[in-house]
Length: 127
Image (tube, one colour):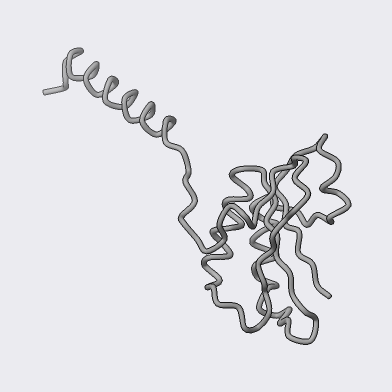
């Protein structure tokens, strides 16, 4: 026997409630060793901290992915640095692509001065 109008209305209400619950959900990037001090927010802050990214780094690549996700979600800038002799570019190539796919672009410190276009960024310096 086909469902009556009352059952159809109940299914419709359940679908609307599910949709509203999903729309209300907000993505919360997981906690990571990349704490607030390693991010800037296109403001006038003059002292910026940066996380080391040499071969001897103590964090996991998943931590860095989570930091990239946070920069994307907050339109903030992640700050990292490395030293050319101890930096393994091959380790980071997939992460550079991951950042690109998440809309996180590389920015220079000179670009951070201009606050007119806040966006997700990654200030990755190598000396």
